[in-house]
Length: 166
Image (cartoon, rainbow, N blue to C red; front, top):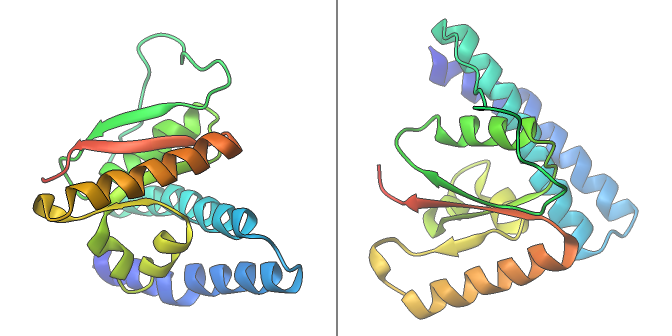
């Protein structure tokens, strides 16, 4: 049931919203940084919305809490997370959002950039794409460095899962 609602939400609401955002960028002749930022902001907003949907459907009472005040001083930051379940992306985005960070680049496995619906958005967002199983370590490092340079140039934070396999 959860998967069906997720699919309906993607097809009927979130993907049309992204297409409208892309059309506006095309009409404004937005540069690559603006188009990339549009994709990242859209992903963050929908991660938060789907987090709420999952919590409601599953009856979960789960809110990230900080042990003491968040130690944010303006950023940008490097977030290092473990990847234990499919909800990690939603929880990670919630924590990042609670800290007031609005722009993040994620290091993700390359196959995610081919996923239906979200894949093109992830590739356009400028994320660091890595191959599974160390198939292309030099290429992985090069792609992550390019992403990190771009993030530094525009003042964005970076998110990486140090434990890349669940």
